[in-house]
Length: 468
Ligand SMILES: [Zn+2]
Image (cartoon, rainbow, N blue to C red; front, top):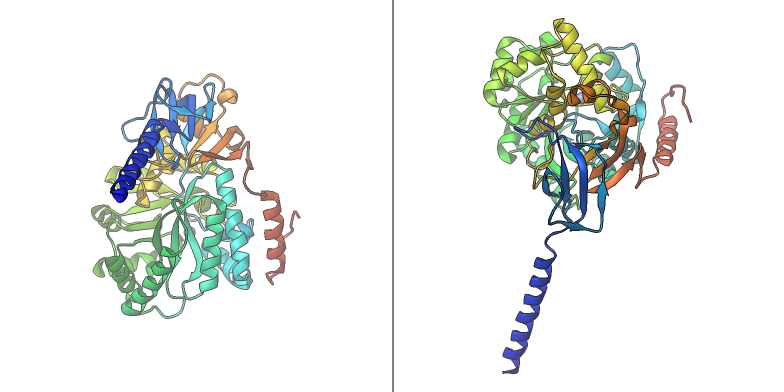
């Protein structure tokens, strides 16, 4: 009897808890009002004046025109007409490279690779890579990037290196697709061996407290750099076993394009080319390669700043769009796109394509801005989480003060042609402000930069002229 009574009491107490949480269902972590919203969502190209509501789990509860009626929060921000876009998403970054900006200034890809990898990176220690990754990620966030792909340095066999870089990714607060290498630069592992290695990596990743920051894991592909079909075979086996995506650098370098194109046959024959393949750069295609990529549902990352700096070339984006290729944009590593800035990336890409065609109508400001947000999220297979401001996705966004813009004739044109870091008053991740007027709010960025520079000096190779 007593037992039943206590149980009844417990049940009614639980009921009260449920009622209490139900009653506070309309309370939010953050309410943004009086914003001009550029959601970048499918079928919503027209910006509108409205509100954005972020829940306590960091996800968007509501977004729409007018006021945020029916919602309550202790944190209400009236933007007085400021512009709000989803945080930028680069589908191609190497965060550790932030240590070596300005390197090999007169080199195309392979000369630059030699300088970076053989003269510098090989001398750095795992703990250095923690700091380099942290600096690289925070520099992304300062420029309005809230989610990024990250090519980690080194293979899973180098445990400490891999662990240090994951710590850097996590500490920065950025959301990321973790790109991991398997096998070294020597022999390609046999499929069974590689599968065991990937399983051990995934078990370890599962044990890490990555929370909402880790968007997914992908393989950093190497099949385009190998002289035999083994890499394509092994990477296809990994993709089949774990349903992991593969981000494959392909057709970046102009001088190496002939050799790389000849390897595409292996990738097709081994079954590597599917909708889980994300081609990095993908500049020097031929009609057959493009056709096969589109037919498979593959995607690409376009990296205009890096492609310009290294004289790699300009992909035929208008043609790719016409054929239906899925396209995202990337800022690449900061040693080849020294300023990790999506605004500069959008402009550089748009202008390179227009100049190549001699036609200003071949690519629009809206198209490039969408490629750098939703397009990249789609290319990485994470468009259900980030890339546009829609209910259920993460509340990651940037706030832009339009005062400087004068009379606005076409808001997307103003954004693509004129906007820059100096116009961003805030960067939010999961409804939390992490950057104000270019300064990180949760990290001592200046201190991190000093630490990185000391480590670069100590990394063995002669350094460039340094600012501090
Ligand atoms: Zn790259």
